[in-house]
Length: 164
Image (cartoon, rainbow, N blue to C red; front, side, top):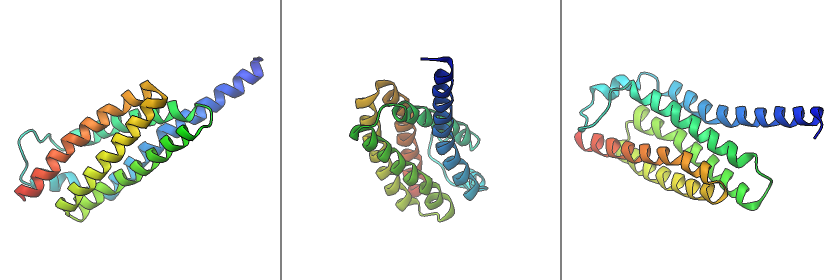
């Protein structure tokens, strides 16, 4: 590979990585903008044991979105295939479903509906993780903290529904 070809290849990979990181972080930022002030409502609600302070959520979600973006990059950089297309389609769908959960929970106050939506999201992320893992073990591993956090979020969501 010549220097010129190698440079173009590196630029393309860098652009792909930045795009893959920007998409989930952008989804999180827009969702956060639409639900600003929601942590005040959360902090004032009756909460179950183990509920973290409100500042924890944006920190955790930023890390999770960065890991998701990295996982999607590991898939996106691979040669075209049906498996890759399926994996990235599932990834896009789960991101869209993820985007809507805080709107249902915080803005609408639909705690039970939000819990059902979160179960749907968890299932989609499980399928995405499984599909990523079949293509790239590392990509699959990067999605596991997201599943763990969604499980914890489900606990919080359900008990906030019961307690409020």
